[in-house]
Image 1 (cartoon, helix red, strand yellow):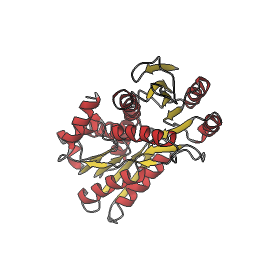
Image 2 (cartoon, helix red, strand yellow):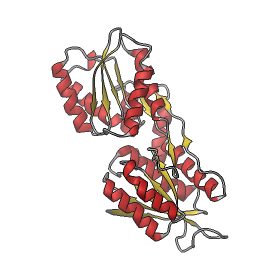
Image 3 (cartoon, helix red, strand yellow):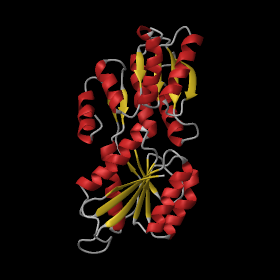
Image 4 (cartoon, helix red, strand yellow):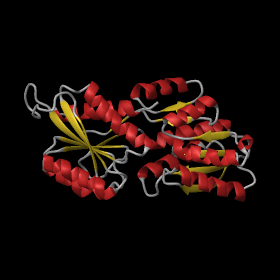
Length: 311
């Protein structure tokens, strides 16, 4: 297990309840090798350092994409007696007993990216359905008549995956002529998406579009298309998350669109919800707006990434 300490200001002040004292936040990151979840986790640390350094100090544990490590990270913070735990779930159901344990110890739990149905914690996220729907609508406006498409999904079993696919289908609902050739989980992995795309290019003579649950898998598929010298056959190539690579691909014209998740705004929303709860207010879910990234507005998101240190 990898431990990272990031203090918001001085670390020798005590937590909670008086002038000059700070609340302790434990952040259990899902996987710091995953581009989006790393961006989101790092934005939480940055928000603490730059906006909330008079109220909070934060320590981060990287779960490495492993459910057991994520749970162990939460248990570590419970034993340390933190005031708040931020966690990026991998498997939501497995976290419920540990979340219950946290609340038994008067620790606030806020999840990011995934809602856990434990009845106590709340979530900060962008609507996965809405992001999928934005992508589907963009495709519906762009694809040629009687288009054939493939949809590359993330990790099987996650609610985010179900919601993004349902959103995509909703966005495409105005186009009865669009044919979905295949839906395939690629587990958020570039290489798997590339492998599947290579296979589909062999099986299907006509593919007009690729809709991917994230930019990384989309770029894996695009790599396969480039290697097969078939880029001119595709009228739509779109992903989700608005990652640096995804933004660069939209700007260059390699891909058509991405859909932004606003990690900096999600981080601020998380800390504002903690302050609201600590102040006696209700702990509530918060939904952060999303935006379709096109050539017209991609520079805005590239600037955001540069300011975040991602580019």
